[in-house]
Image (tube, rainbow, N blue to C red; front, side, top):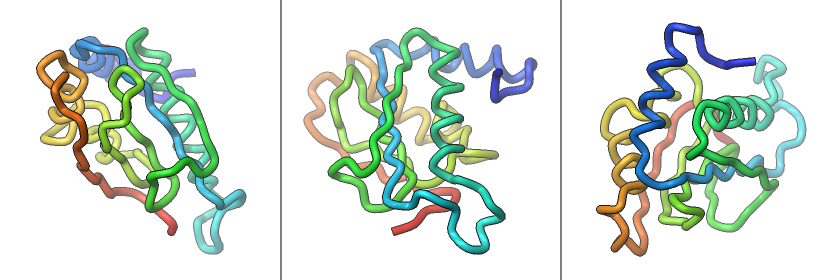
Length: 139
């Protein structure tokens, strides 16, 4: 089941088709196994995983994996964008939903950074930290 409306799905596919290199999205769930009090019974880790799985369904260039508490994350849930499986320090903290989802998949400066980091032009980059903090996060 797609996470996008039919009219948006084609646009998202086009954005993902702009990727020049394969991208792995690493979902870091964090220590929280149940929703936090007052979080309207939303399992933010599960929702983040569902969004990332939905993105991976739309492009052969996008894959994902899920880990509980991988090294290198400050808050949870989080997504690391790994061009060709390489950690370049690009993190997205929080549940990517609403306008935040646009920043993850291609809208604005963050999306442009993701597309560039996944291009052949960024092959010389050995490390970049571009924190993107939106949605709900926990420490």
